[in-house]
Amino acid sequence: MKNKTLIEDIKELIKTNKEDVIEINPKFLEYFTQEELESIRDDLVIKKLTQKENNSLFLDEIYEKTKKDKI
Image (cartoon, rainbow, N blue to C red; front, side):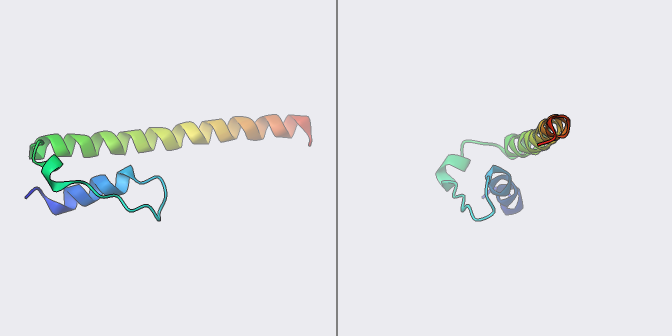
């Protein structure tokens, strides 16, 4: 069996909501090597960080626009 912590990390990174329950078919995991799973985890971490950064920039932009409009 693949490293359980690694699989749990991947499940956590896939979540879009804290209440989500992510299940991954163990048979599906057999197709991946340990290195490939680590790469998937690393890619998900980068995506999550990039998404947070992009959202932050977007929200800052909206905030600046609303300040100018003086709603």
